Figure 1: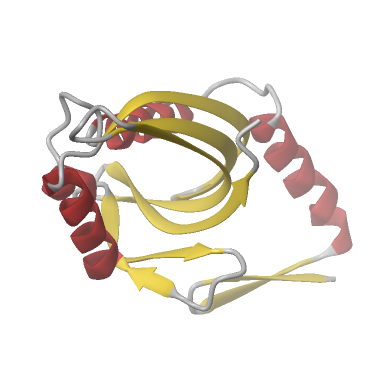
Figure 2: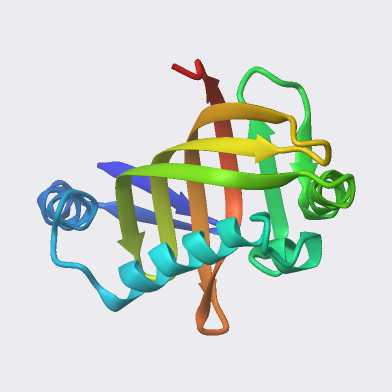
Length: 165
């Protein structure tokens, strides 16, 4: 028997059901037929990214893609940022003149179960500073997205920085 917790609800899955659920999760995550929610999620991920591009609309637009109870954690850090603190940091960075000039994304997995999605991806970004200076970062992301009011919102993200090679 496997226990799965979703917010305040616990589901107990009997062994016979495990195979069916795992099959469904694997088929969505690894090349299964693309669903409308999956396409909408990919589009939302791209729109979120566009908010910090040179033509991006900045921190408020970025924040509109985050759930009210959003949090971000960099693995190995003792700091967990909530939505307010994270958007505040994005605003300072954006107002200082920084933008994401180039972004590459490798989607490793997208699992959708009802109104929840779990994604794993690797993102490489090049940052352009106000004086033309550039820097680069690469990170593995594990994310939880929630579908509320007919749209996807980023609920949790765990970030693991990677070498820029």
